[in-house]
Amino acid sequence: MGDMRDEGTLFSLRVGLNTTTDNEFKEYFNTIWWPNATDAQLNRLLELYPRSAGSPYGGALLDSVIGPQYKRIAAVQGDYVFEACRRQLYANFQGPIWNYQTEITLPLSILDNSIVGELLGSTGLTTPPVLGSFHAFDALFYLFGTIPGIVSHNSLNIMSTVVSFVNHQDPNHHNLNIPNWPQYDLGAKKSYQFRETGPKIITDDYRQAGTDFFNENADTLRV
Image 1 (cartoon, rainbow, N blue to C red):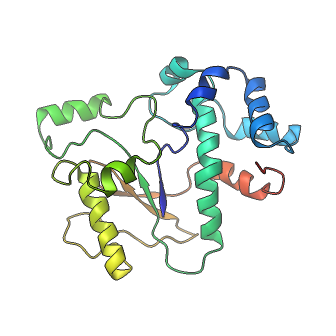
Image 2: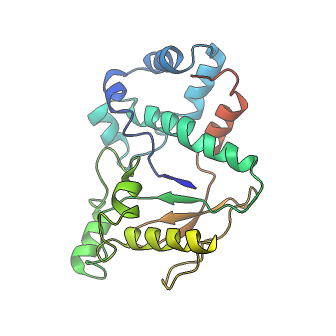
Image 3: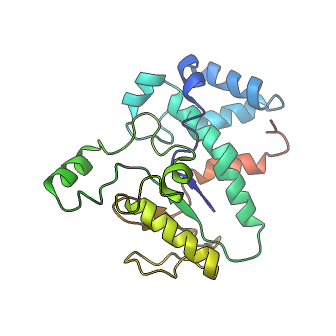
């Protein structure tokens, strides 16, 4: 089980354009999402998700293009709907878990070790603008081989590890020269990040305080 790096961006474009202030941010979530939320909870939300929070790549530039609250809204919506639910499931699931995160960049397998590939990678131009690594891209383009494995490392690695898991209940039975995918546990929280430059092991603790806040206040923060 896992998520895209930027699950909330695709769902935040319209409200990101129309929400410009902290008060409008609070009003949006109080009116549309959580009518039972207290003012103290909404203020805590502002603290846990400052305007620099989350993704996509690009920092203040993208906030200025879409709106000053866009990345913040995207981080909250992505964490509430995807990340917090996933972590809550892990905390209550008895059995082996393999967790992943997928990052989108321009497929570089045909440009490996070339001047063009190194130049594109160093400039950041390989990342989709505004949306970053957005919801459903992995299923639509990697998992079904829409971008073929001969072109995309992500397609090859994701399809291979999924086939391994289906056949062996373990994603590591393949012939690829990639790192071993460790099982997830609540202590180490080791996760597999799919990248075009090759998978790496990351710790699943990004914005942990935010997802803990949602899960600890689940009775109040109901849609």
